[in-house]
Length: 116
Image (cartoon, rainbow, N blue to C red; front, side, top):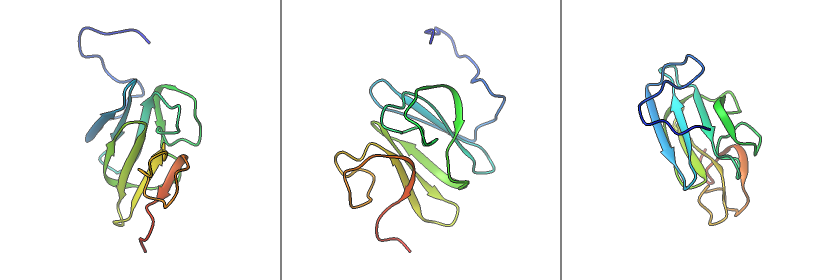
């Protein structure tokens, strides 16, 4: 929780093929070349996706054993397209942004409503 004036390596030793950052206070998610998703940072609404609402100082694996082809981080929510094509979102759903036909939050990936 120290500001860094220069680029600093993310702890954990993983290599990320894709990175996305979102939110006001902020959370960050990385996608490895094998499609594993990891997130860290502010987690008040479950946007890290590890089945908790505790802030994460280091990368935490997104729950559910899914692999993703892409992901994006928004304001207190995250969405990813799973390797099979279905879209999942997690975090704050207060304005329906998870696409689950609900305004509830989810601390784990929830499949967007209406997909096979």
